[in-house]
Amino acid sequence: MNIKLKRINSISGVIEVPSDKSITHRAVMLASIARGNSIVRNYLQSDDCNRTIEAFRQFGAKITIDKGTLFIEGAGLKFAKRKSSRYNIYAGNSGTTARLFPGILVGQDSEAIVTGDSSLSKRPMQRIIDPLSKMGAKFESAKGFLPLIVKGTSHLKAISYINTKSTGQVKSAVLFAGLYADGITTYSEPIKSRDHSERMLRTFGADVRVCGNIVNISPVEKLIAQDISVPGDISSAAFFIVAALIVTGSNLTIKNVGVNPTRDGLIEILKQMGADITLTNMREISHEPVCDIVVKYSKLKAVNIDASVVPRMIDEIPIFALVATQAEGITKISGAKELRIKESDRISAVVSQFRKLGAEIEALEDGFVISGFGGAHHFTGTVLDSFEDHRIAMTLTIASLIARGETVIKGSHCVNISFPGFYEVLKAICK
Ligand code: S3P
Image 1 (cartoon, protein in one colour):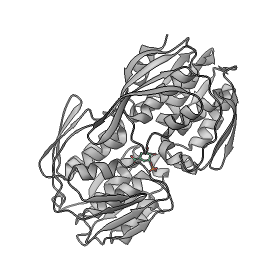
Image 2 (image 1 turned 30 degrees about the horizontal axis):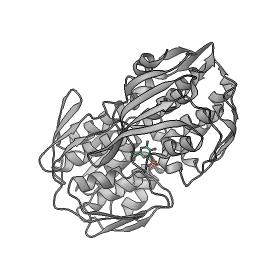
Image 3 (image 1 turned 120 degrees about the vertical axis):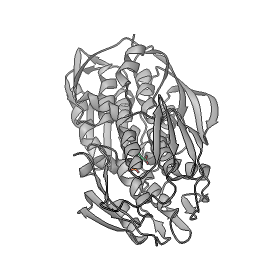
């Protein structure tokens, strides 16, 4: 599907964004291996999360859906073994399904084959194969890529794993496997990646201890069913935060957004740039900090970002690059090489499409150098490609709001991966 967009005058209103994708995946997974009946309220009803729901139904979790709520009767830590064949898990576009689920499968006396769409099939799986193999699981893969055959064992060894990358997905796979291991599993990473798994494992009754960037997890007899509410996704809110900042005269409130300190890098950096952003009504929901965010159009100054903050805003870097095109001065983004292996090569995608709009942007191997217009110059609309990457489609959509004339975005339907209803929310606040 292609969408046609026009420049707008301003943005105003009060909105909510869909629920957090990372938290929804983890809630479905842990509720599925818990004992008893869990409720996951306000879960993210998106293509990616549906892949996880389907996967865990195969393992015997009974998952029913009533509007935005999931009712999950857990299958327990060990699924009943399927006798005749191996499990067949189709992860679609979802890296989180493909990389977290093996952390649970390795503790089963079972086998599964994980496949995905063409984008996911280009994304590396070696990063989970390495630690999980050390724990005693066996894998077959297409040279570190999908399809991935995962062979679990009932004799999983506890390991101490030092990762040189900060990645929430690998950390979560190892911690989930640690539930089944024969002792305390230790995981450490250079910069703390998102910690939703640590928080939620504790909520479900696991013994998880955190000391700086080191996490220890002990094996458990069972996890206990919970009633979880999922907050709004800051990675989805990011598109509207930026829209309000760069469209003159805007004033927007986004309610009920998760602001976990391992995910709030974008807000911190935007404030350093001079953004008028206020966090109000701060509270905690299911052990996650949540607030309402008020954003007003702001004149912004360039700032450099590097590897020390990138893990806290990894999914927001494409939309941050858009802010940088409107700020005054030169922004350098480095330490973000992981963007090359997301749903698309997000460095190439941003550079090629922003240049078509008229931006001055150079690619680095691990980031960008962007010369900002200082708010004085707007883009010119043209035909842009989303590369079927949801975050690129939404970034280009927000860019089109400040582009003269008409912008066409090819493959805009991919927003459903994380943000069904994105264009409806946008329509409601554009003046
Ligand atoms: C995610 C972790 C991040 C992020 C992805 C979701 C998660 O990936 O980019 O969208 O839910 O754990 P990495 O683990 O590769 O950093």
